[in-house]
Amino acid sequence: MASTAGEQLVIFDLSGQKYAIPVLKTQEIIKMVDVTPIPRSADFIEGVINLRGRIVPIINLHKRLNLKRSENTRDTRIIVVEHNETSVGMIVDRVQEVGRYSPDEIERPESIMQENEYISGVVKREDALWLLLQLDRVLPKIAM
Picture 1 (cartoon, rainbow, N blue to C red):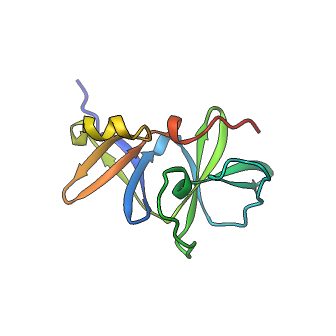
Picture 2 (picture 1 turned 30 degrees about the vertical axis):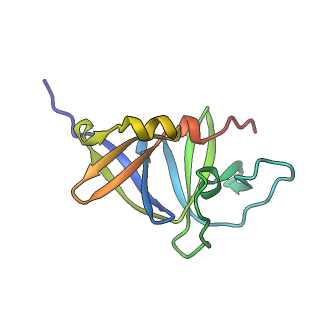
Picture 3 (picture 1 turned 90 degrees about the vertical axis):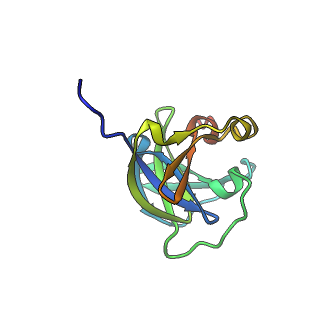
């Protein structure tokens, strides 16, 4: 029986906390660019960008997760992910690294998970905690 090295995650900062999403869902990570607002859209939708000829909706994760909004810096990035067969960008404070985890490093504290539909678990790594985002819940149904 072959041993697995674990799944890879993209680890990023949002309001001083580390979050993680699967590398397999990530298409690319780009520097922050000007976002064109869309009138009458949900408050957490920043707008759209033109990414090499494709129109990509951009989600403000601070607003979506109800976190304190920080100003964009040189480290601010847009993580473009695959969601429902379309590309969606998520604004994050900084991308830290791509890390691996094994299933035994994940905890699913029931008390927290029941209260927060956006977090699927917590990865414990030495002195760090990564909150695993549940992309299907975080990202709305977007038809572009």
